Structure formats: C-alpha cells, structure tokens
Length: 425
Image (tube, rainbow, N blue to C red; front, side, top):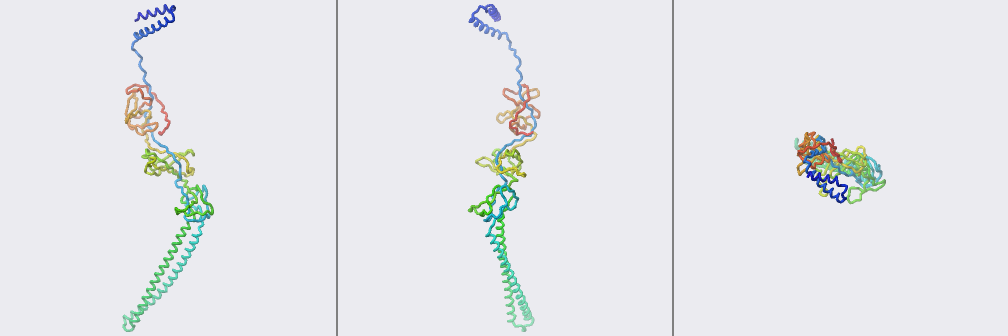
C-alpha cells in the first residue's frame, strides 16, 4: 500500500499539467481514498486523555429558614354598629357628625319624648300620694295601739283582782274588759296590715317611676365604645322610631366604628390550617400606605368550609395612630414553619427519585459521591438537611446529566440566584 501511495504521488506531480479537468477530478478522488486508507494504516490508536467535567458546587451552610404564605383581604373595624333609639322620639340635640371621635359613654344625641316626661310626672304624683297614705295609716295605727294598751291594762287589773279577791269584781265585768282588749288587739293587727299594704303601694309606685326613668334615660343616646362616626342618618327634629321591634321601619341615628383596633378576616386554605395558632405574629402590609403593621392571630372558626375549603381566620391589628381605615386592601404574611441554625443546601442540589432524595458530594480528591439525605424544611431556594451532610461539604448544584458516582470532576463555585427568597439568615 505504501508503494501505491508513492506511485500516485509521482503521477500527480508529473502529469498534472497535461490532464483534462475531468481526468484530474477523478484522479483527485482516487488519491483521497488511497490516502485515507494509508492514514488509517499508519496512525496508531493513541488519543489524548478526556478533560475532567467542570461542575458548579455550593457549600453546606447553616441558616434559619422559614416558609410563608401571603393572603389578601380588606381591613374591617374591630366593632362597627348602627346606633338606634330605645324609645321613639324627636331629635332634640345632635352633638356628632361625620368623622367625630367619641369616647365610651359620651352623649351623642338627645331625644325629646313628651309621653315619657308626662309619665314621670304622674309617677312622682303617685309616689307622693302613696307616701301620704303611709303617713295616715301610721297615725291610725298609733291610735289603735294606744287604745289597745289602755284596754289591755284595764283587763289585766280586773282579772288580777278577780283572781286574788273573789266576789269583789263581777265575772261579767271581767269578761267585758277581756272582749274589749281582744277587739283592740285585732284593730292593731288590722292597722299594721293596712300600713304594710300602703307601703307596698308606695314601693310599686317607686318601681314604676324607676322603670319609666330608665326608659327616659334612653332619650340620651350614648356611645357604647370609643370610636369615630362614619355615617349620620338623622338631623335635628327627625322623628326616630324605637329600634326594639322587628316589624318597625326603625332608622338608626349614626354609625359608630371602633378605629383603634382593626381585624383582617382571611380565608386560610385547608393545606395551611395545621400551622394556624392563636397568638402567632402576622405582618400585615397595606400597599396603599406603603407600610407594614404588626398583628397577631386572635381567633379562627376551627372548621373548614365545604364550598371554599378554607378556614375563617381573624388577625387583630392595633391602630393607635389611627392611620388604618376601613376597607383598605391588606396582605397578611403568615409564618408557617421555622427552623433555626440548620444545615442547608440550594434546592438545585437535590435529586428526587420517588421517596428517595440524593445529592452529589465532592470529596477532597474531587471525586463524586452519590449520597442519600433527609430533607427538612423546604423553601423556594433552600432545603434544610436533617441528616446525610456535614457542615462545609461541597455539593453539586449544576446539571447532573452525565455525571456518575466515582467520577473525578473540576469543582467551580457558583452564585445561586434567589428569585423568591423566603429564607432568612
């Protein structure tokens, strides 16, 4: 084959100038095939060694991880009520308007109720009459008591003489004295009963006055709690109906809203219910105010609604500076899980195969080891390692395709991008 190659080289160098273009092309093709076979014969199987693959690595570091969920809702006052009148009447005085802040017990309006005013005067007259009756009966009872004392003394003396000296006092005279004594005693008892009856009548009159006075006191409309007036329905002279009957078209006087404490009612999805606890801290962000307020979980319904699969949860938010307003849109960030000072790796290092999770660890000789680990808290960027790794070990965070355990690699540190950071260090 070597001789053929040499012969083709000489032919090419000597006769190239006299060959036609077609013959020259054929000759070149033949030479290419021959040279290829010659090259395959002469070249040996020796190749340069394949380069070690370069992989991105990250160290096992300790962090404090937490997992959050953000739920949105509207702020509502802790308490908000429409204030109605207990008794029907005309608005005589109105001391509040939109935006007026009131304290608990402060008078907001006064009603004019002529019927109750007249009833109070009648009750006072009945009490005065009952008091006069009591005085009259007391005087009569005193007179009855005096008569009884005299007759009883007379009977006692006659009876003593009759018993000690028979024949001096007639039996008839003693019997008459005894009868008069008994009659006087009965008259005293009757007077005492009459006195008790008149006193009872006076008590009834006083109770009626107290009842009517209580109703009349409702003519002063007071604030049941401190807050701000957010609506006014009545004006001076307006006839307001009593708000105690369901059949009446009663109109409230004002609407009162508590503004030093707000509540945020949020529907917590079923999958997060297990993490909700009374007293847990909640950060409440109000985008329109560009501010975050501290709150806490105060109460929840302890059941999951069938239609939405959520649990009614309320977060209390103090508002001492009165910057929060009803109806503002707010976002509550609930802290679901927390683990402090735990070994962590980027989530890119994990390889899940069914229920098994492994990572590629690089030893001191840059050799890969496929190691099984137990994963704890998992966030969008980091994973807590419960077991399987030690602090400072290097794990592969780049593409694992083509990598095998026992393979030697060239490690290269990489910066892990966190597009949605949920861990705190």
